[in-house]
Image 1 (cartoon, rainbow, N blue to C red):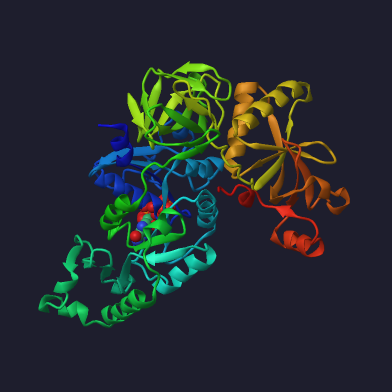
Image 2 (image 1 turned 90 degrees about the horizontal axis):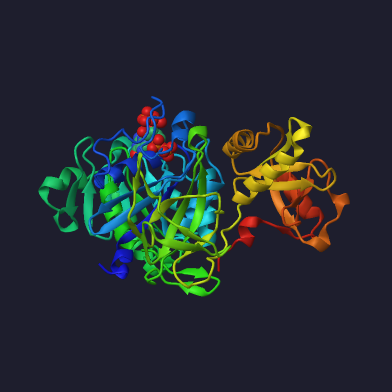
Length: 525
Ligand code: G4P
Protein backbone atom coordinates (compact mmCIF):
# COMPACT_ATOMS: atom_id res chain seq x y z
CA UNK A 1 0.00 0.00 0.00
CA UNK A 2 1.31 3.45 -0.89
CA UNK A 3 2.11 6.05 1.74
CA UNK A 4 -0.80 8.10 0.42
CA UNK A 5 -3.25 5.23 1.02
CA UNK A 6 -1.85 4.55 4.48
CA UNK A 7 -2.32 8.22 5.40
CA UNK A 8 -5.88 8.31 4.04
CA UNK A 9 -6.78 5.38 6.34
CA UNK A 10 -5.66 7.12 9.49
CA UNK A 11 -7.98 8.94 11.88
CA UNK A 12 -6.22 10.42 14.86
CA UNK A 13 -8.37 12.14 17.46
CA UNK A 14 -8.83 12.95 21.12
CA UNK A 15 -11.95 12.92 23.24
CA UNK A 16 -12.35 16.01 25.40
CA UNK A 17 -14.82 16.62 28.19
CA UNK A 18 -15.28 17.77 31.73
CA UNK A 19 -14.82 14.96 34.29
CA UNK A 20 -17.87 12.68 34.55
CA UNK A 21 -19.42 13.65 31.22
CA UNK A 22 -18.79 10.11 29.98
CA UNK A 23 -15.40 10.08 28.24
CA UNK A 24 -14.36 6.71 29.69
CA UNK A 25 -17.73 5.13 28.96
CA UNK A 26 -17.69 6.32 25.35
CA UNK A 27 -14.02 5.39 24.81
CA UNK A 28 -14.80 1.93 26.09
CA UNK A 29 -17.59 1.48 23.55
CA UNK A 30 -15.27 2.53 20.74
CA UNK A 31 -12.66 0.05 21.93
CA UNK A 32 -15.33 -2.66 21.93
CA UNK A 33 -16.25 -1.84 18.33
CA UNK A 34 -12.56 -2.00 17.47
CA UNK A 35 -12.21 -5.36 19.25
CA UNK A 36 -9.47 -3.91 21.41
CA UNK A 37 -11.35 -5.05 24.49
CA UNK A 38 -13.97 -7.74 24.73
CA UNK A 39 -16.11 -6.75 27.67
CA UNK A 40 -17.32 -3.44 28.97
CA UNK A 41 -16.10 -2.32 32.35
CA UNK A 42 -12.45 -3.05 31.79
CA UNK A 43 -11.22 0.37 30.89
CA UNK A 44 -11.53 2.03 34.21
CA UNK A 45 -12.88 1.10 37.58
CA UNK A 46 -12.52 4.39 39.37
CA UNK A 47 -14.21 3.11 42.46
CA UNK A 48 -12.73 -0.35 42.55
CA UNK A 49 -9.24 1.09 42.22
CA UNK A 50 -8.51 -0.87 39.05
CA UNK A 51 -6.56 0.85 36.39
CA UNK A 52 -7.38 1.87 32.92
CA UNK A 53 -6.23 -0.28 30.06
CA UNK A 54 -4.68 2.91 28.86
CA UNK A 55 -2.52 3.27 31.96
CA UNK A 56 0.61 1.75 30.64
CA UNK A 57 3.54 2.79 32.75
CA UNK A 58 4.64 1.39 36.05
CA UNK A 59 4.55 4.77 37.64
CA UNK A 60 0.90 5.12 36.92
CA UNK A 61 0.17 1.85 38.59
CA UNK A 62 2.17 2.86 41.63
CA UNK A 63 0.56 6.22 41.93
CA UNK A 64 -2.88 5.18 40.88
CA UNK A 65 -3.25 8.00 38.41
CA UNK A 66 -2.79 8.37 34.73
CA UNK A 67 0.23 10.61 34.36
CA UNK A 68 0.45 10.28 30.64
CA UNK A 69 -1.93 10.72 27.82
CA UNK A 70 -1.83 7.32 26.30
CA UNK A 71 -2.74 6.22 22.84
CA UNK A 72 -5.16 3.53 21.84
CA UNK A 73 -5.08 2.28 18.29
CA UNK A 74 -7.07 -0.28 16.37
CA UNK A 75 -8.33 -0.99 12.87
CA UNK A 76 -11.99 -0.18 12.31
CA UNK A 77 -13.68 -0.91 8.96
CA UNK A 78 -11.38 0.62 6.35
CA UNK A 79 -9.64 2.86 8.85
CA UNK A 80 -6.78 2.82 11.28
CA UNK A 81 -7.94 4.61 14.42
CA UNK A 82 -5.66 6.39 16.91
CA UNK A 83 -7.37 7.72 20.03
CA UNK A 84 -5.25 9.95 22.25
CA UNK A 85 -6.32 10.07 25.85
CA UNK A 86 -6.59 13.49 27.50
CA UNK A 87 -6.23 13.11 31.26
CA UNK A 88 -8.99 15.05 32.88
CA UNK A 89 -9.46 14.55 36.59
CA UNK A 90 -6.81 15.49 39.13
CA UNK A 91 -4.21 14.78 36.46
CA UNK A 92 -5.26 17.65 34.18
CA UNK A 93 -2.02 19.30 33.09
CA UNK A 94 -0.20 21.01 30.27
CA UNK A 95 0.21 17.57 28.72
CA UNK A 96 -3.55 17.41 28.33
CA UNK A 97 -3.43 20.57 26.26
CA UNK A 98 -0.34 19.52 24.31
CA UNK A 99 -1.95 16.25 23.28
CA UNK A 100 -4.31 18.35 21.21
CA UNK A 101 -1.39 19.48 19.02
CA UNK A 102 -0.97 15.87 17.89
CA UNK A 103 -4.54 15.11 16.73
CA UNK A 104 -6.45 15.86 13.56
CA UNK A 105 -9.88 16.13 15.13
CA UNK A 106 -11.63 16.08 18.47
CA UNK A 107 -14.78 14.57 19.94
CA UNK A 108 -16.28 16.84 22.59
CA UNK A 109 -18.62 15.15 25.06
CA UNK A 110 -21.23 17.24 26.80
CA UNK A 111 -23.41 15.99 29.62
CA UNK A 112 -27.01 16.75 28.60
CA UNK A 113 -27.90 17.41 32.23
CA UNK A 114 -25.05 19.79 33.00
CA UNK A 115 -24.38 21.43 29.65
CA UNK A 116 -21.01 23.10 29.09
CA UNK A 117 -18.61 22.87 32.02
CA UNK A 118 -15.30 24.68 32.75
CA UNK A 119 -12.84 22.04 31.58
CA UNK A 120 -14.71 21.67 28.31
CA UNK A 121 -14.30 25.39 27.69
CA UNK A 122 -10.55 25.30 28.36
CA UNK A 123 -9.96 22.35 26.05
CA UNK A 124 -12.28 23.77 23.42
CA UNK A 125 -10.24 27.00 23.39
CA UNK A 126 -7.13 25.05 22.48
CA UNK A 127 -8.95 23.30 19.62
CA UNK A 128 -10.26 26.61 18.41
CA UNK A 129 -6.85 28.23 18.46
CA UNK A 130 -5.45 25.33 16.39
CA UNK A 131 -8.42 25.19 14.03
CA UNK A 132 -9.10 21.54 14.92
CA UNK A 133 -12.44 20.14 13.70
CA UNK A 134 -14.75 19.37 16.62
CA UNK A 135 -17.50 16.76 16.69
CA UNK A 136 -19.93 17.03 19.60
CA UNK A 137 -21.58 14.11 21.38
CA UNK A 138 -24.32 15.16 23.80
CA UNK A 139 -24.44 12.33 26.29
CA UNK A 140 -26.87 10.83 28.83
CA UNK A 141 -30.09 11.21 26.85
CA UNK A 142 -31.47 8.43 29.03
CA UNK A 143 -31.61 11.00 31.83
CA UNK A 144 -33.81 14.02 32.28
CA UNK A 145 -31.54 16.64 30.77
CA UNK A 146 -31.81 20.09 29.29
CA UNK A 147 -33.87 20.80 26.18
CA UNK A 148 -31.90 20.08 22.98
CA UNK A 149 -32.43 23.59 21.59
CA UNK A 150 -31.16 25.07 24.84
CA UNK A 151 -28.02 22.93 24.66
CA UNK A 152 -27.32 23.95 21.08
CA UNK A 153 -27.82 27.58 21.98
CA UNK A 154 -25.39 27.25 24.86
CA UNK A 155 -22.73 25.71 22.60
CA UNK A 156 -23.20 28.49 20.05
CA UNK A 157 -23.07 31.27 22.63
CA UNK A 158 -20.44 30.08 25.06
CA UNK A 159 -18.11 28.42 22.57
CA UNK A 160 -18.91 30.66 19.64
CA UNK A 161 -19.18 27.87 17.11
CA UNK A 162 -22.02 27.09 14.73
CA UNK A 163 -23.87 23.84 15.46
CA UNK A 164 -25.48 21.37 13.12
CA UNK A 165 -27.54 18.64 14.80
CA UNK A 166 -26.81 15.42 12.89
CA UNK A 167 -29.67 13.77 14.70
CA UNK A 168 -32.60 14.96 16.78
CA UNK A 169 -33.82 13.34 19.98
CA UNK A 170 -37.38 12.37 20.73
CA UNK A 171 -38.07 12.81 24.43
CA UNK A 172 -35.51 12.20 27.14
CA UNK A 173 -35.06 10.32 30.39
CA UNK A 174 -37.91 7.88 30.96
CA UNK A 175 -39.70 9.22 27.90
CA UNK A 176 -36.70 8.87 25.61
CA UNK A 177 -37.87 7.17 22.39
CA UNK A 178 -34.93 7.56 20.03
CA UNK A 179 -33.40 9.91 17.48
CA UNK A 180 -34.08 11.07 13.96
CA UNK A 181 -30.89 10.41 12.00
CA UNK A 182 -30.98 13.33 9.58
CA UNK A 183 -28.09 12.29 7.37
CA UNK A 184 -29.29 8.73 6.80
CA UNK A 185 -33.01 9.53 6.82
CA UNK A 186 -33.85 6.94 9.44
CA UNK A 187 -35.25 6.78 12.93
CA UNK A 188 -33.08 5.03 15.50
CA UNK A 189 -35.36 3.56 18.13
CA UNK A 190 -34.32 3.30 21.76
CA UNK A 191 -35.26 -0.11 23.14
CA UNK A 192 -33.99 0.23 26.69
CA UNK A 193 -31.66 -2.62 27.50
CA UNK A 194 -32.23 -4.21 24.11
CA UNK A 195 -30.25 -3.21 21.05
CA UNK A 196 -31.49 -0.12 19.18
CA UNK A 197 -33.44 -0.62 15.94
CA UNK A 198 -33.22 1.35 12.69
CA UNK A 199 -36.42 2.39 10.91
CA UNK A 200 -36.19 4.18 7.54
CA UNK A 201 -38.29 7.38 7.51
CA UNK A 202 -40.59 5.79 4.89
CA UNK A 203 -41.59 3.03 7.29
CA UNK A 204 -42.47 5.28 10.23
CA UNK A 205 -46.05 5.46 8.98
CA UNK A 206 -46.44 1.69 9.34
CA UNK A 207 -48.99 0.50 11.81
CA UNK A 208 -46.35 -1.25 13.88
CA UNK A 209 -44.83 2.14 14.75
CA UNK A 210 -48.04 3.97 15.50
CA UNK A 211 -47.88 3.56 19.25
CA UNK A 212 -44.66 5.55 19.11
CA UNK A 213 -45.37 8.03 16.34
CA UNK A 214 -48.62 9.22 17.90
CA UNK A 215 -47.04 10.17 21.25
CA UNK A 216 -46.78 13.85 22.14
CA UNK A 217 -42.97 13.55 22.38
CA UNK A 218 -42.76 12.21 18.84
CA UNK A 219 -45.11 14.87 17.45
CA UNK A 220 -43.16 17.63 19.20
CA UNK A 221 -39.78 16.35 17.97
CA UNK A 222 -41.13 16.05 14.44
CA UNK A 223 -42.15 19.69 14.49
CA UNK A 224 -38.76 20.72 15.84
CA UNK A 225 -37.08 18.71 13.12
CA UNK A 226 -39.17 20.43 10.44
CA UNK A 227 -38.16 23.76 11.93
CA UNK A 228 -34.49 22.75 11.85
CA UNK A 229 -34.74 21.61 8.23
CA UNK A 230 -36.37 24.84 7.22
CA UNK A 231 -34.69 27.49 9.32
CA UNK A 232 -31.67 25.81 10.92
CA UNK A 233 -28.02 25.98 9.85
CA UNK A 234 -26.98 24.17 6.69
CA UNK A 235 -24.50 21.35 7.06
CA UNK A 236 -21.12 22.31 5.62
CA UNK A 237 -18.26 19.84 5.68
CA UNK A 238 -15.94 22.68 4.75
CA UNK A 239 -17.01 24.67 7.81
CA UNK A 240 -16.61 21.54 9.96
CA UNK A 241 -13.10 20.92 8.69
CA UNK A 242 -12.22 24.57 9.33
CA UNK A 243 -13.43 24.26 12.90
CA UNK A 244 -16.26 26.74 12.29
CA UNK A 245 -19.17 24.33 12.59
CA UNK A 246 -19.59 21.37 14.91
CA UNK A 247 -21.79 18.42 13.96
CA UNK A 248 -23.81 17.51 17.06
CA UNK A 249 -24.89 13.96 17.89
CA UNK A 250 -27.28 13.10 20.71
CA UNK A 251 -27.03 9.72 22.42
CA UNK A 252 -26.11 7.71 25.46
CA UNK A 253 -22.64 6.28 25.95
CA UNK A 254 -23.82 4.02 28.74
CA UNK A 255 -26.88 2.42 27.11
CA UNK A 256 -25.16 2.45 24.58
CA UNK A 257 -27.45 4.29 22.24
CA UNK A 258 -26.51 6.11 19.05
CA UNK A 259 -22.82 5.49 19.68
CA UNK A 260 -22.19 3.11 16.81
CA UNK A 261 -24.00 5.35 14.30
CA UNK A 262 -22.13 8.35 15.68
CA UNK A 263 -18.79 6.60 15.27
CA UNK A 264 -19.55 5.44 11.73
CA UNK A 265 -20.42 8.96 10.64
CA UNK A 266 -17.58 10.55 12.58
CA UNK A 267 -14.96 8.23 11.14
CA UNK A 268 -16.09 9.06 7.60
CA UNK A 269 -16.22 12.83 8.10
CA UNK A 270 -13.20 13.34 10.38
CA UNK A 271 -10.11 14.44 8.48
CA UNK A 272 -7.13 12.19 7.83
CA UNK A 273 -3.70 13.62 8.67
CA UNK A 274 -3.20 16.97 7.01
CA UNK A 275 -0.15 18.87 5.82
CA UNK A 276 1.71 20.66 8.62
CA UNK A 277 3.45 23.98 8.66
CA UNK A 278 7.20 24.13 9.06
CA UNK A 279 10.05 26.60 8.72
CA UNK A 280 10.47 25.39 5.13
CA UNK A 281 6.80 25.64 4.21
CA UNK A 282 4.06 23.05 4.16
CA UNK A 283 5.01 19.39 4.74
CA UNK A 284 2.64 16.95 3.07
CA UNK A 285 1.80 13.74 4.99
CA UNK A 286 2.61 11.64 1.92
CA UNK A 287 6.03 13.17 1.49
CA UNK A 288 8.27 10.05 1.23
CA UNK A 289 10.74 11.20 3.90
CA UNK A 290 9.85 10.54 7.51
CA UNK A 291 9.21 13.56 9.72
CA UNK A 292 7.59 13.98 13.11
CA UNK A 293 7.56 16.09 16.24
CA UNK A 294 7.74 15.36 19.94
CA UNK A 295 4.69 16.51 21.87
CA UNK A 296 5.36 14.83 25.17
CA UNK A 297 8.22 13.39 27.16
CA UNK A 298 7.42 10.89 29.83
CA UNK A 299 10.04 10.39 32.49
CA UNK A 300 9.64 7.07 34.18
CA UNK A 301 9.67 7.73 37.87
CA UNK A 302 10.46 4.18 38.83
CA UNK A 303 14.11 4.46 39.94
CA UNK A 304 14.80 0.97 38.61
CA UNK A 305 13.85 2.10 35.10
CA UNK A 306 15.10 5.63 34.80
CA UNK A 307 14.25 5.78 31.12
CA UNK A 308 12.39 8.45 29.32
CA UNK A 309 10.00 8.00 26.46
CA UNK A 310 9.39 10.70 23.90
CA UNK A 311 6.03 10.62 22.15
CA UNK A 312 6.33 11.40 18.47
CA UNK A 313 3.49 12.31 16.18
CA UNK A 314 4.46 11.11 12.73
CA UNK A 315 3.79 13.84 10.15
CA UNK A 316 5.10 12.37 6.90
CA UNK A 317 6.81 9.43 5.26
CA UNK A 318 7.26 6.01 6.74
CA UNK A 319 8.75 5.26 10.11
CA UNK A 320 10.75 2.06 10.24
CA UNK A 321 12.30 0.60 13.34
CA UNK A 322 16.04 1.00 13.39
CA UNK A 323 16.03 3.96 11.04
CA UNK A 324 18.28 6.95 11.65
CA UNK A 325 16.74 10.36 12.10
CA UNK A 326 18.14 13.81 12.62
CA UNK A 327 17.14 15.98 15.52
CA UNK A 328 16.56 19.25 13.71
CA UNK A 329 17.41 21.53 16.66
CA UNK A 330 20.96 20.20 17.04
CA UNK A 331 21.62 18.36 13.78
CA UNK A 332 22.54 15.23 15.74
CA UNK A 333 21.59 11.85 14.29
CA UNK A 334 19.88 9.12 16.35
CA UNK A 335 19.09 5.52 15.55
CA UNK A 336 15.54 4.71 16.57
CA UNK A 337 15.96 1.12 17.56
CA UNK A 338 13.80 1.07 20.65
CA UNK A 339 10.56 2.30 19.22
CA UNK A 340 7.36 1.46 20.94
CA UNK A 341 3.78 1.67 20.11
CA UNK A 342 1.86 2.87 23.07
CA UNK A 343 -1.12 0.60 22.95
CA UNK A 344 -3.48 -0.09 25.76
CA UNK A 345 -1.78 -1.83 28.65
CA UNK A 346 1.22 -3.04 26.74
CA UNK A 347 4.20 -1.46 25.13
CA UNK A 348 4.52 -3.37 21.90
CA UNK A 349 7.44 -2.87 19.64
CA UNK A 350 6.43 -1.13 16.49
CA UNK A 351 8.05 -1.73 13.14
CA UNK A 352 6.44 0.86 10.93
CA UNK A 353 4.22 3.88 11.21
CA UNK A 354 2.77 6.61 9.02
CA UNK A 355 1.49 10.17 9.36
CA UNK A 356 -1.12 10.32 12.10
CA UNK A 357 0.44 7.50 14.13
CA UNK A 358 2.01 8.08 17.52
CA UNK A 359 5.18 6.27 18.46
CA UNK A 360 7.09 6.21 21.70
CA UNK A 361 10.86 6.35 21.33
CA UNK A 362 13.57 5.94 23.90
CA UNK A 363 14.94 9.33 24.89
CA UNK A 364 18.69 9.37 25.58
CA UNK A 365 18.14 12.64 27.44
CA UNK A 366 18.50 14.55 24.20
CA UNK A 367 15.00 15.54 23.24
CA UNK A 368 12.76 18.44 24.17
CA UNK A 369 9.06 18.94 23.77
CA UNK A 370 8.41 20.47 20.35
CA UNK A 371 11.51 18.92 18.73
CA UNK A 372 11.38 17.92 15.07
CA UNK A 373 12.83 14.61 13.86
CA UNK A 374 13.71 14.17 10.20
CA UNK A 375 14.90 11.54 7.77
CA UNK A 376 17.31 12.32 4.92
CA UNK A 377 18.63 15.65 3.85
CA UNK A 378 15.68 17.80 4.85
CA UNK A 379 16.35 20.56 7.37
CA UNK A 380 13.28 22.19 8.88
CA UNK A 381 11.36 22.47 12.10
CA UNK A 382 7.64 22.17 12.56
CA UNK A 383 5.84 25.20 13.97
CA UNK A 384 6.66 25.76 17.58
CA UNK A 385 4.16 24.19 19.96
CA UNK A 386 1.98 26.75 21.69
CA UNK A 387 2.58 27.63 25.31
CA UNK A 388 -0.40 27.31 27.58
CA UNK A 389 -1.17 29.77 30.34
CA UNK A 390 -0.51 28.26 33.76
CA UNK A 391 -3.28 28.58 36.28
CA UNK A 392 -1.73 27.45 39.53
CA UNK A 393 1.32 29.23 40.98
CA UNK A 394 3.72 28.41 43.81
CA UNK A 395 6.94 29.85 45.12
CA UNK A 396 9.62 27.19 45.20
CA UNK A 397 12.85 26.90 47.17
CA UNK A 398 15.40 24.29 48.16
CA UNK A 399 14.99 22.93 51.67
CA UNK A 400 18.72 22.98 52.08
CA UNK A 401 20.28 26.27 50.92
CA UNK A 402 23.61 24.53 50.41
CA UNK A 403 22.05 22.73 47.45
CA UNK A 404 21.26 25.83 45.45
CA UNK A 405 23.50 24.76 42.58
CA UNK A 406 21.68 21.45 42.00
CA UNK A 407 18.40 23.25 42.65
CA UNK A 408 19.04 25.70 39.84
CA UNK A 409 20.29 23.01 37.49
CA UNK A 410 17.27 20.82 38.16
CA UNK A 411 14.83 23.64 37.64
CA UNK A 412 16.54 24.76 34.44
CA UNK A 413 16.37 21.28 32.97
CA UNK A 414 12.84 20.46 33.99
CA UNK A 415 11.62 23.81 32.75
CA UNK A 416 13.40 23.37 29.45
CA UNK A 417 11.82 19.97 29.08
CA UNK A 418 8.46 21.67 29.39
CA UNK A 419 7.44 19.91 32.60
CA UNK A 420 6.57 23.18 34.30
CA UNK A 421 6.94 26.95 33.72
CA UNK A 422 9.31 29.22 35.61
CA UNK A 423 8.88 32.86 36.58
CA UNK A 424 10.76 35.26 38.79
CA UNK A 425 9.21 37.78 41.13
CA UNK A 426 10.09 41.24 39.85
CA UNK A 427 10.94 42.56 43.28
CA UNK A 428 12.34 39.65 45.26
CA UNK A 429 13.77 37.60 42.38
CA UNK A 430 12.33 34.51 44.05
CA UNK A 431 11.44 31.52 41.86
CA UNK A 432 7.80 31.04 41.06
CA UNK A 433 6.50 28.00 39.25
CA UNK A 434 3.40 27.96 37.11
CA UNK A 435 1.45 24.90 36.01
CA UNK A 436 -1.93 23.95 34.66
CA UNK A 437 -2.67 21.47 37.44
CA UNK A 438 -1.51 20.19 40.80
CA UNK A 439 -0.06 17.02 39.32
CA UNK A 440 2.76 18.92 37.65
CA UNK A 441 3.97 20.06 41.08
CA UNK A 442 3.95 16.53 42.41
CA UNK A 443 5.92 15.29 39.45
CA UNK A 444 8.34 18.23 39.72
CA UNK A 445 8.97 17.60 43.42
CA UNK A 446 9.49 13.90 42.86
CA UNK A 447 11.91 14.40 40.02
CA UNK A 448 13.92 17.10 41.83
CA UNK A 449 14.43 14.69 44.70
CA UNK A 450 15.14 11.62 42.63
CA UNK A 451 17.05 13.01 39.70
CA UNK A 452 18.79 16.04 41.23
CA UNK A 453 18.87 15.03 44.86
CA UNK A 454 17.27 18.26 46.06
CA UNK A 455 14.30 18.43 48.37
CA UNK A 456 12.06 21.36 47.53
CA UNK A 457 9.46 23.36 49.43
CA UNK A 458 6.49 25.16 47.99
CA UNK A 459 4.67 28.22 49.20
CA UNK A 460 1.28 28.46 47.54
CA UNK A 461 0.31 31.57 45.62
CA UNK A 462 -2.86 29.92 44.42
CA UNK A 463 -4.88 30.18 41.27
CA UNK A 464 -4.07 33.27 39.25
CA UNK A 465 -4.93 34.71 35.87
CA UNK A 466 -1.72 35.51 33.98
CA UNK A 467 -1.63 38.38 31.51
CA UNK A 468 1.48 39.47 29.65
CA UNK A 469 2.49 43.13 29.29
CA UNK A 470 4.30 45.08 26.60
CA UNK A 471 7.80 46.01 27.79
CA UNK A 472 7.22 49.74 27.40
CA UNK A 473 4.05 49.57 29.50
CA UNK A 474 5.54 47.94 32.59
CA UNK A 475 5.10 50.18 35.61
CA UNK A 476 6.05 48.56 38.87
CA UNK A 477 3.98 50.96 40.90
CA UNK A 478 0.77 49.53 39.48
CA UNK A 479 1.20 46.12 40.99
CA UNK A 480 1.35 44.75 44.51
CA UNK A 481 1.31 41.43 46.33
CA UNK A 482 -2.20 40.75 45.20
CA UNK A 483 -1.53 41.37 41.54
CA UNK A 484 2.03 40.09 41.27
CA UNK A 485 4.40 41.40 38.64
CA UNK A 486 6.73 38.65 37.44
CA UNK A 487 9.16 37.88 34.62
CA UNK A 488 9.09 34.79 32.44
CA UNK A 489 12.09 32.84 31.11
CA UNK A 490 12.37 35.13 28.12
CA UNK A 491 12.33 38.22 30.31
CA UNK A 492 8.84 39.23 29.30
CA UNK A 493 6.72 40.73 32.04
CA UNK A 494 3.38 39.45 33.14
CA UNK A 495 0.95 40.06 35.93
CA UNK A 496 -0.62 37.30 37.98
CA UNK A 497 -4.07 38.67 38.71
CA UNK A 498 -5.74 37.38 41.80
CA UNK A 499 -9.09 36.72 40.15
CA UNK A 500 -11.44 37.77 37.38
CA UNK A 501 -12.63 40.71 39.46
CA UNK A 502 -9.11 42.10 39.94
CA UNK A 503 -8.42 41.66 36.24
CA UNK A 504 -11.56 43.53 35.22
CA UNK A 505 -10.94 46.28 37.77
CA UNK A 506 -7.48 46.78 36.35
CA UNK A 507 -8.78 46.85 32.77
CA UNK A 508 -11.37 49.48 33.68
CA UNK A 509 -8.86 51.68 35.47
CA UNK A 510 -5.93 51.35 33.09
CA UNK A 511 -7.47 51.32 29.67
CA UNK A 512 -4.17 52.38 28.09
CA UNK A 513 -2.34 49.25 29.24
CA UNK A 514 -2.63 46.28 26.92
CA UNK A 515 -3.00 42.93 28.68
CA UNK A 516 -2.13 39.92 26.56
CA UNK A 517 -3.81 36.55 26.99
CA UNK A 518 -1.55 33.66 25.94
CA UNK A 519 -4.49 31.81 24.43
CA UNK A 520 -4.99 34.66 22.00
CA UNK A 521 -1.30 35.17 21.18
CA UNK A 522 -1.05 31.52 20.28
CA UNK A 523 -3.68 31.74 17.60
CA UNK A 524 -2.74 29.54 14.76
CA UNK A 525 -3.07 31.20 11.39
P1 G4P B 1 -15.48 10.56 32.51
O1 G4P B 1 -14.53 9.52 31.98
O2 G4P B 1 -15.81 11.61 31.51
O3 G4P B 1 -15.09 11.12 33.82
O4 G4P B 1 -16.91 9.85 32.75
P2 G4P B 1 -17.30 8.34 32.93
O5 G4P B 1 -17.34 7.66 31.62
O6 G4P B 1 -16.49 7.73 34.01
O7 G4P B 1 -18.82 8.53 33.39
C1 G4P B 1 -19.16 9.23 34.55
C2 G4P B 1 -20.44 8.68 35.11
O8 G4P B 1 -21.51 8.91 34.19
C3 G4P B 1 -20.41 7.18 35.35
O9 G4P B 1 -21.25 6.90 36.47
C4 G4P B 1 -21.05 6.63 34.09
O10 G4P B 1 -21.62 5.36 34.29
C5 G4P B 1 -22.12 7.68 33.85
N1 G4P B 1 -22.53 7.74 32.44
C6 G4P B 1 -21.76 7.80 31.34
N2 G4P B 1 -22.53 7.83 30.22
C7 G4P B 1 -23.80 7.79 30.63
C8 G4P B 1 -25.06 7.78 29.94
O11 G4P B 1 -25.16 7.81 28.73
N3 G4P B 1 -26.18 7.75 30.73
C9 G4P B 1 -26.13 7.71 32.08
N4 G4P B 1 -27.27 7.67 32.76
N5 G4P B 1 -24.96 7.70 32.76
C10 G4P B 1 -23.81 7.74 32.04
P3 G4P B 1 -20.70 6.72 37.92
O12 G4P B 1 -21.86 6.43 38.79
O13 G4P B 1 -19.81 7.85 38.30
O14 G4P B 1 -19.73 5.52 37.79
P4 G4P B 1 -20.08 3.99 37.65
O15 G4P B 1 -20.04 3.50 39.04
O16 G4P B 1 -21.44 3.88 37.01
O17 G4P B 1 -18.97 3.48 36.81
